[in-house]
Length: 414
Length: 184
Image 1 (cartoon, rainbow over the protein chains, first blue to last red):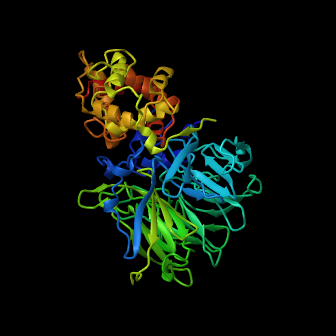
Image 2: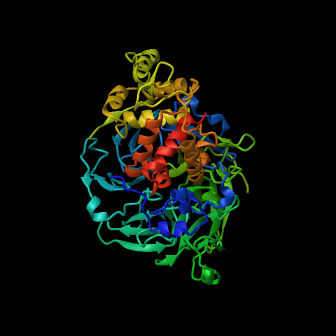
Image 3: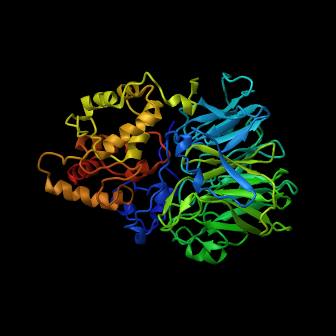
């Protein structure tokens, strides 16, 4: 079940300029994980995480008229009624599975051609955001549980196999809800985020691991990863590309979220000492280490915007979209909270350079954010490519899925 | 395993009791105007809509709340939950009765300031969106809730309240509950 937020961060956090640490006699109180590093200048700040929505949104309440895509593309509402639905995976027989966080559910969405229906596969889990499929077998990972549903597409009532013991999951919740994916090597890739905003985490956190599908053979393949919420493999090079969220409470402009490329195993991506393209952390870096904090750190291929909340990544391998999109990425940015002017709330197209060392970021699906009113109508989170080459985009705020298709005509020239 | 079908179309149930009938069940304990006069029962008046929705959805799902509330919420649709939440959000909150203990209020105010309750619950402590109104809530309800957050946090998407209250003493929490109950 739930565990308390006792982290290796406590000691580090209380060295920060945070008054809560100063008043309690003993033990010292850590600030809330998301408030760590919130210096005195934020004493009167009212910035707080955006509220989610745990109730169904009917089709007529999804503001489709606001959404925009480039010329020649079309965006339509494909499904709704899955509150909190995030990452999507598709089984061999066409069923789609979606995880959630606070609501504790995993959904199955069935495409009946002209309409979609959904059901709850399992509920009452603690943040079951991680879903992956191999064939028709579904894997679900929550904070404290790993479940396998064998051949669930054909056997809707199948009882899950509890795999939890094999995966040795650490207890912290913060940033430890999962994104899951099977790699080209058929292994299961699992991130373990830093259990804090900023801290020096213990050795089981701030990393990406991979396992054999049965939970054996665990390897840590990347370190210094604060919290990746999505990754995919380049269709030609086979390299893993992943998003990572920058820390909060260092100002409106950064450190920016990251898009990283794992050119080999064992790289260090910088957390907690070196953020973004070389921002040395002012809270946890000792004075004598400031000059070397970014040494041997792999810098991001591209900065993805301040507090943007970069989520799912998908390389486009379909043939429906114009050729220029082939092998480019679509990346969802769920949108900021730790910033006075909201940023993100879109899906961008990201085109890597031939050498994979830089990338061009172009808005693709927009209209969720009303910049003038500082209000958002939805929060795009994950992307799934369908067999026909269309893209599905999940909206975690509205519990909806959009379908983006290309219907011919000239592709918009960039 | 619980398998629940809930295609959106199924939301319009013909046999479901009207909202007025549901509200009668709420009023029995939480007060007809949403201001509870019953020890241990929270006031719902002027609570933010999203907060009430979240509590009711998670209660229905069996992820929080007691057996009585879980029983009452059985089969209540999302649409009804939103209607209930809208109703309570619009009711005015009444100030807590009785004279506050000035010294205890001052201690509670100082502690609440240090814990930065106002970042999320806003400086007037009336809450917003997913963060509940604290001002004027029943003192023993606030006390029990904060003790529970500190010692046995309930499910949810974050660990904020647990971490906020980590290291506070029962006496600290008593002072904050007193201050918040008398805040307006």
